[in-house]
Amino acid sequence: MHKLTLTNHNTRKSFSITIAAGRETKESVAMVAEPPPAAEEHEEDQTRRDLEQKINENRATPSDLRELLSICRHTRDRGCVARVEKLIK
Image (cartoon, rainbow, N blue to C red; front, side, top):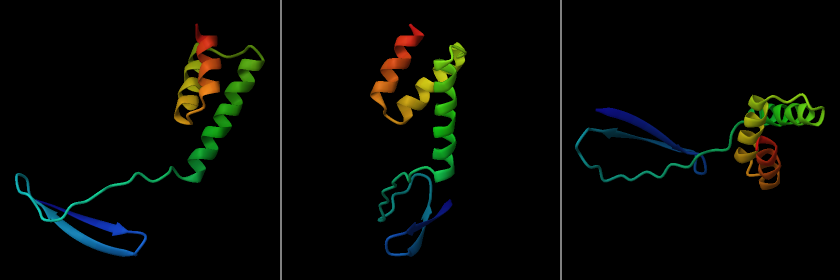
């Protein structure tokens, strides 16, 4: 058995559900991912700027390009993805 405590931040209410393997419960739960903390976003932005500077100075390694491509995909920046993919090829 597992006990799960859920909090609804909109209503500031918490409730607990006990989950047992192989059993159904009358409660249903929808889980929503929260945005990453601001510090994490700031760190990613700084890393992107550093990598783009290395590319502009022709000092970027293949690993740098792959890391920047990952960041561009994570931020859904299609222009950035296209530019980096072109550099990788």
